[in-house]
Image 1 (cartoon, rainbow, N blue to C red):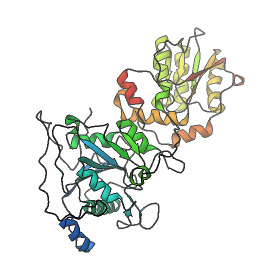
Image 2: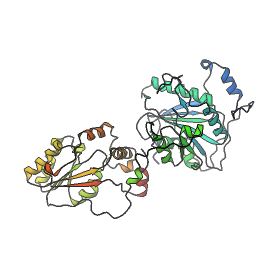
Image 3: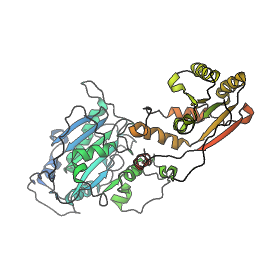
Length: 439
């Protein structure tokens, strides 16, 4: 496991080999009144009658990991846990799951603009703590800006103020993880989950996945902004519920499974050759979106046949690509042009070169949906083993630009033939496991 060092915090030492079970905090003496299963403690009663402006924060520590991940750890009233059993986890999204804006706005207007998503939320979370669950909040918070200097941003301070109020009200041991960038920490990727496991030594002692669950609102239902929460639960291997299902006991709603990465895994069956040389000297151009698998196709199918690769990401300009391709072809070496070549105008530069040199030009057309290409983009950006060329994460505009310019190639452009390639991911078991996660 790749361990990312955090900033503004020292990571724990190597985990001991003995059984891990931190001593429980001493319970606060409490007068308990059974009212709709809500436990009232002296502290919570005192908090109720104390003005918010006079309340003191409890044991709440904040840190930032790798300049993008916010971690807040609150040590409220602890329940004794068993060292012999694997830990049960109750994980939640934050916004539109535990809380919502009090104003009704999509995004909170101030740190005080929040209320419980439903009145049953705080008592239900406290019950989970009493039942031995470890509660954790895992949230995407891209609107927060984390400055690298000494001064904390207003958005970060507002987030801390709001979450502090939420945790003080709950008063159970709970950690909050908030991803602020589109990196390895952002759901449905597992960076926040791994950080949580390491923080509590659960990467050593283990998690009871069958008893654990994740609750979130991004479930792929009609009207949902995405299904990243559902994908996050699938990646972890735990049960998933929406807030309506968990807190209100509503029946599961239908959702649209728009993209399933496992359907693109190569089955292991022997394929016929995906590409064969037809002429002693030829020019081959690729046509496909970023993330469609063009470079992998070259290394697996054309490089072994001796084709020289021309790539604009490396050479930086089309004139340089044309110059290098001409030199190789003049030297008697076939060339593969590993660029997007989205439209006839771009491809015309290459058909003109082939005509000038009096050699055939062929086209490999990569058939990959925008969802698949974006998945490839994210999977390789956050997994070094899937990214031998160290490709950086591409912004969404790269895929939109290709889609706007794309016109399917035609033999009328002067191409001698067009080879259509359907994407299938090939690799070992661990590579397939990584690639088939949701990103």
